[in-house]
Image (cartoon, rainbow, N blue to C red):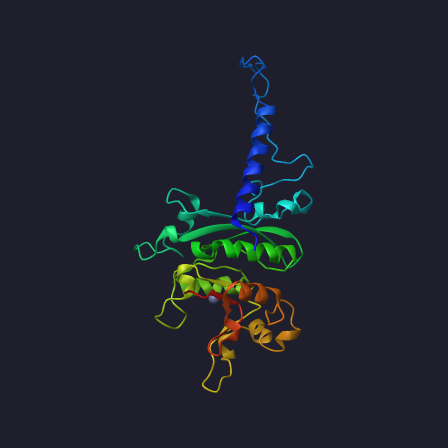
Amino acid sequence: MRSQNNRKKAAVSGAAILAALTLGVGCTTATGEEQTPDAGTTPMIPIVEEHEDNGKMVGNDWYNVGDEVDESLLDMQQLASYFTMEEISKDGDIYQRILGKSFPEDGSMELSKLRYLKMLYVDYEGKSRCGEMIVNAEIADVTLDIFEQLYEARYPIADMVLIDTFWDTDGNTTDRKSIQANNSSAFCYRTIAGTNEMSNHADGYAIDINPHDNPYVWCNPDGSPKLETLDAHEQDMMEDREQKEHAITHEDLAYRLFTEAGFTWGGDWSNPLDYQHFEWNRQ
Ligand SMILES: [Zn+2]
């Protein structure tokens, strides 16, 4: 497993390059005098290019969530620099996006236990994109490591935005909308659908991957899945899973990486069957 140290080092080197370039095009003369822009011309704003000498970009500040990312600008030697975590600040935009939605307003969840991840993924069309996810701090590093390996292997992921993007009424209604958008996500303070028990998603210990292609379904007493609770596409994805594109099975790379890292796969459960779901084995 790649260490968090490498990730930090990559980020520092990006900042150093940025600082060096900024100095190189600064507005001060060699003698330290301020230069005055000519009246009537565009003010002198330093053009800062966050790149290395080889024209590659490091760090992930140069693109936004949802953006297609130009792969020719990525430095695969610095791949970890595109997979970052940050604490969520009460002063920041992320907190405003989740407050009263996936994050409860009543104090029943501690913000400091969560980390916001910004990651690359390869979409179903084979394009590199920037995704986001919120997970428990305890699994943030292992999650970045898994998604970095999925990216290197060009593992297809349909979409990866915060579940709050689909917010409607409550956590479980929203979860259903996120599933139907085939959106991969993790943290959402909610119960297990149809029960009063809190889900492992409620404290960011569970991650759902390509959920519309990997259904979550309760079973009848005879073990057969309640197919009537699924839409037509999900019903289709329940059959001949080994032959279906984007179906997570025991042969799947996501299954292998998550389970080797210490997650349990919901596809191995008997009731419910939860093919999209990986949850951390808490000690
Ligand atoms: Zn799940």
